[in-house]
Length: 149
Image (cartoon, rainbow, N blue to C red; front, side):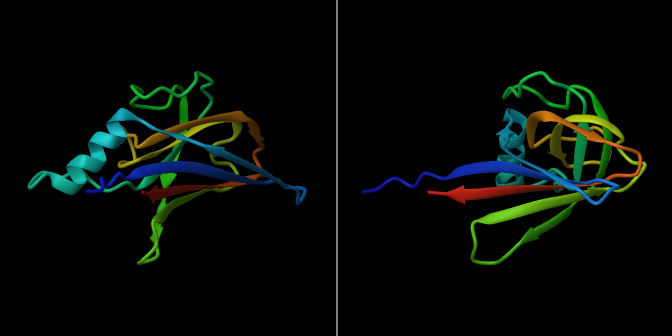
């Protein structure tokens, strides 16, 4: 008899489109937090009062290392709606969010996926080297989650 084991791996790719035309890219693995795993279990198995779907990406300026017990970003500065995408038959899905000029301006160092515009459940958290988003810059985050056996 073989055992089925499913793993979920998360990664974030951030694209900073600077006003001068330069593009800065950061790619970093993220940590799926305990509350995120609880969310997944509830979404699959809870017969009623299931949690709302993941729908937003938050950005912040916190630099504390990611830890499984965290339930929010350390210093969140903005949160925008995310677009979910999954191709049937694949084991990957994404959440993409855009932060246009004038939105989330400052030294961005952390991000996560949430199921609400405010508060809610955080699925994951990632901390990365500072990305200085100027007032005329735009930023796109792509969170990719891949399931494997």
